Every structure is written in structure tokens, then in C-alpha cells.
Image (cartoon, rainbow, N blue to C red; front, side):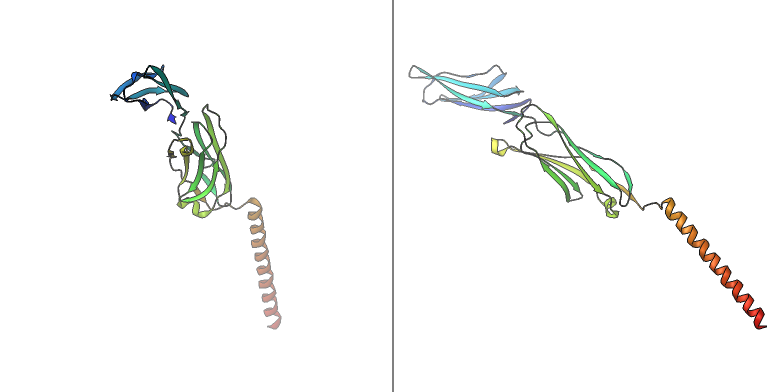
Length: 218
């Protein structure tokens, strides 16, 4: 497994101790790094697609060939996190979106949405397409008061160990969310106004009744 555009060091070794015409056959640019009687070490440049390299040599008058298969992958180089809102009221629904552009293969790619160190959501992709494509994850959640105390982030991890590659890890830039107290609705304002007016009316009636009673007693 080789990242697109990267280089690969290849050891071409013969099966006999004194081979003839030990060469690495490829249309790619290559340089000879080191050699001994039985092997040669090459560096191959600018690998942009799946390749099959041939290591050929002659032992005791018989030509032999060994095949070296290279599979190109497109690792996550960017992780882009977007919040649908930068400022929301408590209890409001908002969307977190994470995009990992131009990755392949999708199989083995896991995208994780985080609030601080807490995992909000993760998704492992499937698919063996060799051409690069965008991986997008969206998650809807409700704003809480404590959300403003933490950064939101997104992690992308491509695991190629089962294919002979390695583990590639990238993290997005952190994003902050401003969480505000909910504003009172018009209906609540009207109800509060009515209650206040009723209290004032009841107070007025009670004062009037109290004054009338004192006059009658006098």
C-alpha cells in the first residue's frame, strides 16, 4: 500500500547467488540505492495508480521473474468540520457535519465526531472503490448548556493494516458553539402580562373592599 504520489523502496532479490541481468522492470522513474551480488535496492517515484513491477534475473541460463504488486490509496489529508449554527439557544436542534475529501478506499475509514473528549457519533465506511471520493458524516443533536464549555472536533482514521499498510490519523480544527438561554415566546409574554393585570385587579378589588369595610365600621 502506497499513498498517491509517494515513493516506494523495493528490494529485488534473485533466487541464486550469482544472477545475471538483475533488473527492476517498470515505466516509473527509479534510482538504484544499493546493490550486492544477489540483490539490488531501488527507489520508485510518483506512484499515482496501482502498479505491477517485475523483478527479473537469470540463474544458470534460465530467466526468472518475481512480481511486486503496489496498491495506491488516498489517505485523509484534510478533515473539515462544520456546525450548522455558531450560536444557538438551549434545547435547539443543530447539525454537525464532517467531510474528509478525496479518500480511497473507503473501507477501513472511521470518522468520529467529538465534544471535547466525548464521542458523540462515529461511522465506519464500507466500499472498495479505488478512485478517491468524499466521505461525509452528519449528526443532529440538541444544544445543552455545557456545550459552550467544550470544543467540537472530528477525527478521521484510515486503517490499512489488513492490506499491508499502516494507520493514518487526521483531526479537524476545533469549533466552538455559543449556547444562549432560550428567549421567551410571544405567547409566554402575553400570559405573563395577563397574570400581572389579574393580580393588579385583584389587589385593587381587595383594597376597595377593605376601605369600604372600614368606613362601614366607623
